[in-house]
Each structure stands twice: as structure tokens, then as C-alpha cells.
Image (cartoon, rainbow, N blue to C red):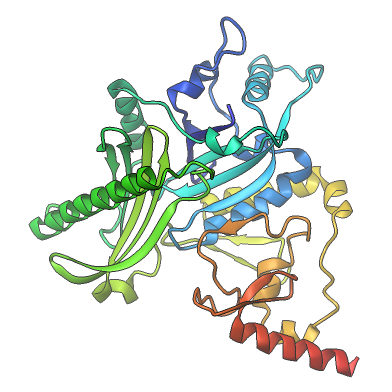
Length: 399
């Protein structure tokens, strides 16, 4: 299986739901993936040499407060190897006679709810003649499977403030009707209930438009899990005259996933966070250390960072690291660049991607041209890039 999807816990990044076609993959005549409880996190299935780097990537994803998804490329255990690993854990066996199979995989993540992450595991084919772009897709799922998924979502349900309103929806691509709609808002107010009903109708229309567009254009030459339809618009949604509407639609075979966030402009200044209202961590002077204040996804990531540092010291030492000697004046003027990028070795930076490109300095997403920043990549808008280039030129003249 070259591409499959799952739902993970945002707090622990453990599997909480796998679709039936993945659960039923048989490794032997009497053992299937669905029989194995997933007691480990996503990090435990990443190659040890890349676990630390992938953890850093993931910290970026958790820290982002937009609807955009993230892509991290790494070596990841195949399904069969995950099964073998879980069997050894169940038997309390430390035997390493069986070799683990690793595949270069794009881990594609989207915030489905405030507690759950929609994740795609897209394996890159080594054979250039193998058109792996067409491997994205899910078979049709029945009502029993939908009910099972609803049960899982209810276990992770928490009541959130109405604004911003975030919804997760799954459509039947062929029949073009919703199979599941989830949000964590409960309201007894009739006005707000009507507002949510209008949003439900709107996300349904947005999803149908994307399904029809893909059919009309016969788009099959790209991996759909990493190339979603993403838009940000301003619309009138009664009772609010103006709302900012962000949406992501992923047409994935028989299933279409839709994520939407709606913020009335009159409340926009009061609602700057979306799915994680309090991400209690920040980078200190040592950019590889995370400061956390409570039990949360950030604490889990911090623990994972400490774990991989201890277990993989030889790995971090062998990876090239940015020099902190050059551009000292720039660091003093804006240390944010260093906090954002210096803890990632050069071989890894660029593997993490946010679908909406933003300047690392001023956070704008609108620029006529993107320029190179301290990490050597085009991460700065035109204005910030020119200022940085002038500053570096002055620094080089002085030295």
C-alpha cells in the first residue's frame, strides 16, 4: 500500500483510527494490523537517524496557528514492519533477528479537530516507471465503519468556544453527500445554531465544487494528499455580515476530506488562535530546548526531543549544523530567524512545508518575490530579504 490515511491523537501522536482496508492487511494467516493495539507514537515508527529531525519538524506544525497542513519526509516503517514491532512488544521480546523495512515516506498532517490530526502516509516509489502519483485514494466505506469512526471521535470530544468555528467533514466522492461531520461546539442559542447550520451548508458546497473541478479537469497526475484545494475568502454568513473563511479539501478516492475554519471579522481580533488556543511553549536561547508549562502536545514533543537527543547523540553530531558566527548583527536585530531555523540541520530544512508560504520575519504571505534568508532558502519576502542582504553586505565589508 503506497498511501493510506489515519487519525492520530494531537497530544500523543498515537494512532486512534485506521480505516478498515489498512486494519485488514494480513501479515500472516491469523494476525492483522487491526488486531494490534497501537501503544506507541508516530515517532517510534520513524527511522532512528531521522527521529530527532522529524520531531523538530513536528514542533513547527504544532506551533503553527493556521489551517495549513504540513509535510515531513523521512524513512518510515512499512505496515508489515509495524506489525512485527508491535508483536515483539506484546511478547516482551527484545529479539532483533527480523530486519525492519523502511520506506521513504511523506507524512502529511492536517488539524482535523482540536484533539485529532488527519495524517496521510505517502510512500515514495523508488522505481521511476511506477506512477505512484495515482496511489492516493481510499475505497468506499460502509455505515458500520462510519459509526465506528464517530465512536472514536466522541472519545476525543471536548467542548470549544464557538469562535473560531472549526469543522471536519468526510464526503462520499461518488455520491457527493456527507458521511460524517464533526465539530467540538455545542450551543443552545438559536442564532448560533443557525450560524453553524449555514456553515455546514457552505462547506458542503465548497466540497462539491472541488469534486466537480477535479472530475472536469481529470486531475490524476499528482498526489492528492499533498496537493489539496486550499482557499481563504470573505463571505457573509448570517447573522454575521462578514466572515473570514479558510478551507482545505482533499479528494482522496472514494472519500473527500474537508476542513474549514470560520471567524467573523467582528471577532477576528479576539480570536487569533484556531485549533490550539494555548500552545504553551517557546524557543529559548538554546533553540533545541522547548519551554513548556503543562501536559500538552508540546510537552510530549519536548520529551521526545530529550529522548532522541540521549539515544541519538552520534546522529546529531554527524549532521551538519548552521554556524552561529556569521551575521551576528543580524541575530541581534532579529533573533527570530535563528529561533525558527538554526536547530534544523541543512539536510533537513526544506523537507518541512506549509502549504501557504509566509515570510519568516514579518509573517506576510504576499510578496512579488521571495528572497534567501539566513538558512540559504527563499524564506523571506522581498522587503525583508533586501534588508537582510544589505545587512549581510555591510557585515562582510567590516570583516
